[in-house]
Length: 334
Ligand code: TXA
Ligand code: MG
Image 1 (cartoon, helix red, strand yellow):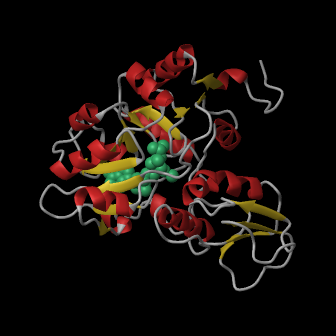
Image 2 (spheres, protein in one colour):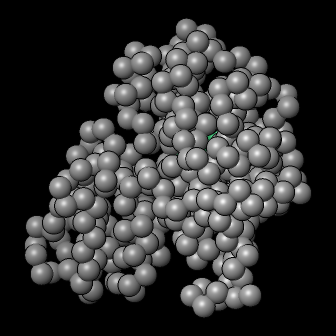
């Protein structure tokens, strides 16, 4: 059966609210298939983390270079501890405070985690997602799920099941859990075994301030150096729209231009389309709407998108990070 709206087979969208949808998704994953799954941050493209060929399938589907490790999703702290050789005390403190939630902890991996998951690195990124459908699926499947964001490599992350359907043209089944509440990816923190302070590898939905309240000093890391060669999550041009995007340009580019920012554009009437991330200037609301707003503007066939950076505090740091990467023209993504 085909759906009238998308022309895609309906059975590729599995209802996340329905136990049968969860069971079907779990069966597919245990058979070695990839399934797109909802989380509170963005949708993930999941595979059984213990099945190296299923994980290879995810890299292939996404067009992602195999030197960029995947986050492994687990249902609780105990399951995370089983995948780590050491779970340092500071990692536990952070887990107890922020899990389930948008924080990924990078710790020394157990031998049971296949090398392809960590791109050959000795450490694994672990996270307990705070989405009821993701948690129900993890409990049903009873295996950890390796999942990058469910977008083709270098493109804007998906914050709804429909985004995934559009991006993969029905090639991946999607477990529908509704729109993502955070809309921006998890914060990635490396916790060393010794006395060194934790290192922020990627700003995300948990702010640096919030981390520091729990564990004191957190160093700002050079993620590219950590991964060497660089992680595409951190490559200059990432999260890209097809429409060229400019961050805080000096002057308005020629043509039909879309505007993206907090509040309202300072030059009313100049823009062919306006996407306000939050009318009230609320950074939580702005993070949640960022990727959808980018996608809506991208769909309009504009000549360019003018993006305005937001205040660099709290979630603003992660929003500005994604805007800078989406706007960077210097580096190819494929
Ligand atoms: O919110 C999220 O984190 C989403 C949802 C689906 O969980 N996932 C996500 O995955 O954004 P991805 O693959 O798009 O980004 C993961 C980031 C990459 O920058 C990767 O380099 C880093 O996490 N990462 C994962 N494992 C790592 C490891 N072992 N060492 C260092 N960095 C790691
Ligand atoms: Mg990603």
